[in-house]
Length: 219
Image 1 (cartoon, rainbow, N blue to C red):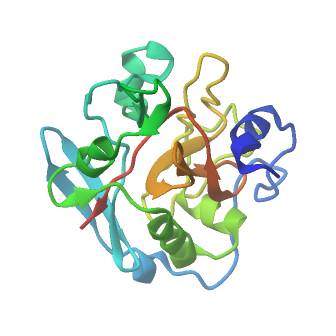
Image 2 (cartoon, one colour):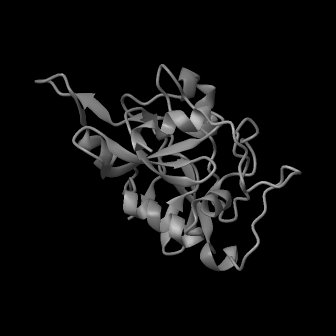
């Protein structure tokens, strides 16, 4: 499947998640031990207080960035959504000479607070590997237990307090709010677009232009 179209297909899909039981409750049965894989959590303050969680060898923010950067918006341009999802960020800007959208690397390099950075694609892949190589299992362990009621894919079990909410993205044609989550990465897919990491039934990578949520990772 064309990665660029993943976002739009995930919004339109009508299948139920394979990781939910008939009762609607999610379950994972194996030898995964959250107390070993993700043993620590806490808070840090950078203008506002952010929860964080340790997963494997990585320390991640356990909630979405809510820094009011230039060009960022609340989902649906509804200010109350920022309290729930954090802000959504545009990472491309028109080139002054050509008018063509280009990646704003100054934004990519500076949007996260000091001591933290926007994760690269490989860091998201490492996170997935820490909680389960198979995309459906990994997504189930990282998604929040609430907030996915409108989703075709169902809620998660949130074993590491990573608490992924279905903030979706934002364009004037679609948002996917309530059905999926898409996080911006610091890895370029080509000259004009970066990869993003998605959560719906599973988790994985795609790329395309839009507004995305951000999770920062500790340096």
